[in-house]
Length: 198
Image (tube, rainbow, N blue to C red; front, side, top):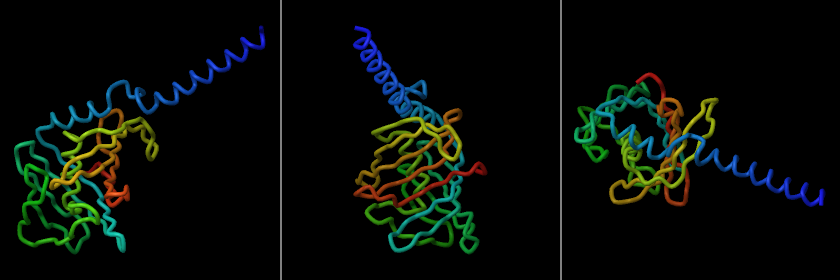
């Protein structure tokens, strides 16, 4: 009898350990992560995001230091190229749908990422749009670069096509830390490292 109880107790302990492991990707945040992200970013009337955006065009990659001035759901936004130095200062107008309207002055032709309708210049507006209303497919808590993060995978519509995005937010403040965008087939085509200097 003792052996049977011991075996049963071991099974209970194993199930409890498994439940704790699974909770790290479901309830460890203490709330619904996608809902928290959606409510936080939907409530913002304005904000500034700055990030190093790296685009993978399959045969080459290119990085931009971009600053995005978001002015609310019903207002146009603006992207400013901060680097590389050769194109610093170029400004692009972003529509309420998060898509590029045009440039003020000099034009920056980047093309669209393979398998998507997204250009690197539209990366930050696309993220903001997804955070505010994308369809969440998964979420969890995990550490990234030593920071405890709330991570969420979202599907957002861009130009009539669905695109998968994944973002990591500081669990304490919901400030963005890092994000990726994926083309059809799951290939990562966009990597975004957010900086504190907005």
